[in-house]
Amino acid sequence: MTEDRVLLKPFQRMPRMDSDFKIESSHKNLTTTTTTSRKKTIFAKYLWFHSSEKPKVFVIHHFSPFRRFWDAGTVLMLMILVILLPLLLAFEFENDGTTAVAWIQTIWFMVDLVLNFITTYPDIEGTAVASYGSIAIEYLRGWFLIDVVSAMPVEELSEFDTIRGSTIARGLKLLKIVKLLRLFKLERNQFVSKIQRRYQLKYSTISLVKFLVLLIVGAHWLGCLFYTVSVTSGCSQPYCSWVVNWAQDKHYNSPIDEQCFSDEPCNYWPLGSRYLVSLYWAMTTMSTIGYGDISPRSEAEQSFALFGMLCGSLAFAYGLTNLCTILFYYKQYEVRYQSQVDLLFEFFERRKVPLDLRLKIQEYLSYKYHSEICEFGGEKSVQE
Image 1: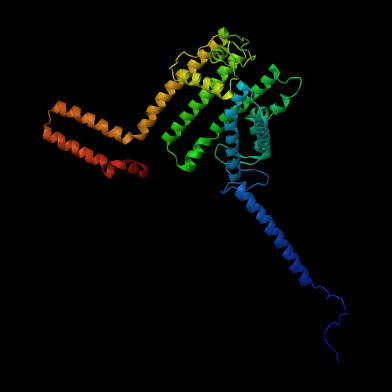
Image 2: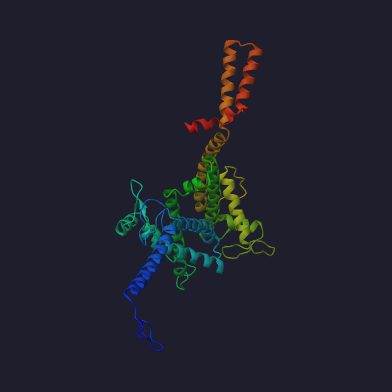
């Protein structure tokens, strides 16, 4: 009896049909397509902005989640630099912690230098430009030079034995000030405005915080630089250095050459106390109080004190104007109500309005001010 089947030997496989090849090929194509689409989805989610623009591989959108995270990290690095740099220049305290932070900042800025060559920028119409050549030209014409200088490993250069502790080493550390120019880059990128829109903060709140930050950072820098000018002026006697004069009065060793100008044994002047005294002088100068217990001795100190008084006058004028504006925005409805009441009083006096009618009109205005129409008066203007 003949059977319509193929008899197989042991361990012999069935011959593969054309349909099997098609199924396997389609399965491989489906797997490859799924993996590719997954990569594109991850790229579009983290490195691109969710909009109608088509993502481009190896290009980071300037509004992408990754770029926002990276910009926030850059702001953190700049904040640390703003605080640490004047302390390192003035008091020259360095340990493993400050060295590690300096290296982290250098590596971060180096990576940021590379990322800027593959990050899009908006054109005049607001469309993201993703061409490598256009991005490179725009970056080279803009912040490239500042970013290169800020990414230089100044810490390693200043640690060479031939220049360690010399004027050249201090000059190399001064190159770190160039890194602060990145703060203007943040202003250009509207970083504060993005935070304001993200967390729905009032303009008055943003203005108050910016003023307080500028005041504290300005006093921090002014005090540290005043100490630096005194220490590096080349005088180590009390009559020509406020630092040495203060050390003599408090029975401390001179921080310049460790001299003791007292008959009694002198103690070490702690770094925290030196910074506190410098910050105290900066705050009294910027607030235009000036108690006079810390006064400049040499011409270099007097010149810097003039600069400090100029900064203090500008900060006082700016702060007073800013605070008045902030208070106005916080109480604009109350100010508007009081203005109406003042105008009403003048009208009463000119027209000789009876007292009973005056009280009724004032009660009506007070009711209107405390009612929902006055309290949420801004809602109507927003809807319009």
